[in-house]
Length: 149
Image (cartoon, rainbow, N blue to C red):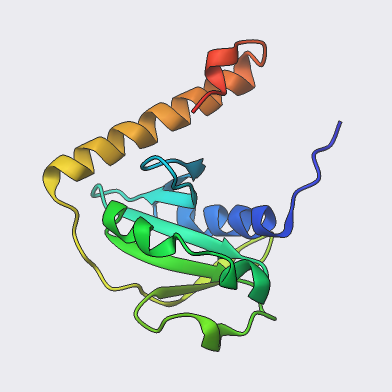
């Protein structure tokens, strides 16, 4: 059975593909703290952590009231949008990525605000555990613990 991806998921796929070209690995839908779920978290070769929020429409962006909460959990923050998105809506002090289902391009780097070492350690551990659960779920879909948060 083929899964039908939503517009934001297609953007996330393109972003994840592009991040590989920067030697970043990614996970989708990671929960850094209760009440928050980032679309894409990217982990760089030097331990840098980027959060990318994928917005497929004006309404999708305008309904997002939690994005500022993500800033405490990353070194850089980006929006990923498609070519038709009205980018003037996006805060200029954030990064910008143009994406589609097959790739992406960084148009504007988000400003760097380095995480404290203790917070970085927590996030790298969350990233690793999230990725391992996803992999285990793919290898053994019958294991409930493999898909729990």
